[in-house]
Image (cartoon, rainbow over all chains, first blue to last red; front, top):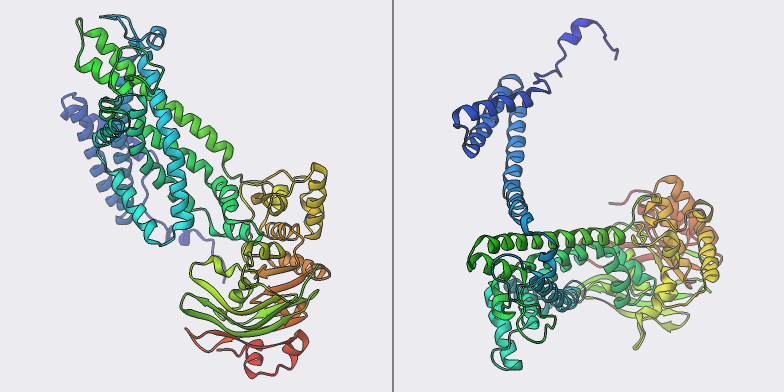
Length: 352
Length: 259
């Protein structure tokens, strides 16, 4: 087989196909934005929608004409994926922006050092609610992680297909769907049974949150333990390592980074719960450092109360509500950051 | 070190499915015994039942007698963990522990079995095992790096080092070279030749040349058909099995006229 290099064969290269220049999508996007602004009457939502529709349809038609059907369909799918991604980002960015914009006004030192004891109108802070949230969530984590972790270990390592394992899985799934207020009422009723009617304190709130947290921990940890390759377990067994030690020293360390993120996601899931804490942890204006005695304020309840039942003038209450919401977001972000660091430290090492 | 294994009328089951039937064989100490045969004939199952790894699979069990220097491995009261401490295993795919460094991998068996070691003693054990696995020169300067960063062949030799660090009596190898290139395969085969001076080695392989090259005795397994249990067709010195086997089916398999 000889290689022909004359120009006529190049011109007729059957592998060639029509192709839009690389700048075409950007030009199309600019054009679509102009069209959107003109027809959308300078309104953000309408303009964006029109621009997006014009861009997606226009690029598809243009590509269909220049590049053919396969590439046109590829572009269509690509643009829809990007579009949906941006749509999903809108509420996230929006919420963060509003929380920062409205919350920054009161995100000052007094906010973190003062409670609302004897405060009417301006000033004061959410120290009592921040401490309360940390206590309640901390205790809830301390209850949920051991129970959830051990349940997950049972399900993934010991349960197999037994009836008990299937039953636990079923009830964990049911627990995932429990409305949070029911968890609050459960904790309230449990505390009433154990310590007498009307016992409302930090522990009660922590129990309510645990009910919500345990199924999340169980499910995520179980999934992670299941993806640890069986070969590693067999390698350990073949070295004469007992099963419990294999789980403790091989399986869990291999999955630890995922377990940590799973636990942090579970914390993030419950830290913003309001209803069960109103029922089980209660409501107070003062700092309470004793989770076993007396009602305990938490950030979500603080935000709700400041916004729904402001005093007069209203603005300082609303400012504090926004600052509280922002603090909650910051706590979750901080937790995620800590989780990342821990995960990176313990992750299985690769590379040479 | 190095002990003799004797199987008497061994049946191996997965639940109600009989995978291997009526195996009787003797595996001599300080020698290499190869198991050959077509896929699904039960040679890996047989190998895994030698150190009670078979029963790790739910529903799997064994009937018959399996003796290690006269002691029944499946006798009442025998702890499988004690069996596995004496009979080490190397798997088809290299499986170093991903959370551990090279040195930690080598010492994993000892550390996880609660043997307290001083720093210098641990260094010695690690070096001896790695030298035994012909890996020392390649990794001596990066002992604290993760084992997963090594090449496939090095990882497999790391797994062998991990197994021999336990100073087992017997070393089982389940197709240890099937995931490796020819050069790494050669390294492992050389290693097997050295190791047989101190260990009883049993190797499962699909590679007939490999069986002919490394083993002293060869056992040929076969199945009558799908769903039928695997059987030991014949066992003997490797020279004899590969030149003048007693059974027709052995000759057919070895010469490639199988199936």
